[in-house]
Image (cartoon, rainbow, N blue to C red; front, side, top):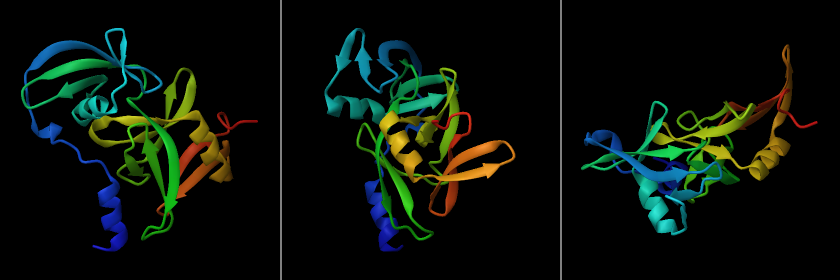
Length: 183
């Protein structure tokens, strides 16, 4: 293992083995994550970062539903869009070229790579970029980050129009197509 691989492993979040647990479903919990990545219990916002990180460590998506899953119980929660927001980026040297690393609103640092690709998904009538994460979860790119990355993307032409493409670790990731590119 080279130094770059070791550094990347140390930066990635430690995940609970949620997929290995098979607890009984215990119903719905009045917990929701709004479209800005804020966590709410009933009508009160949860503002303690440690509590949010604890909940996020056992969050899993199955189909269209989101659950907090522990060895003892599984409860469904509501997620308006993506449970996380990618808020900043930096480039690091990688074995196959520069790698784009995104930081979420929970301070998790994740490389854009085959395991965690950037994908365009439909939301609110628009194609928006999301970073695919572990356990079916995703992080929507914050608008400021999206525009910063658009400035760094390569504009490519094809039969369907223009595309903004980022290369991370030598692999292309579509950030926007001509329909979504700002004028």
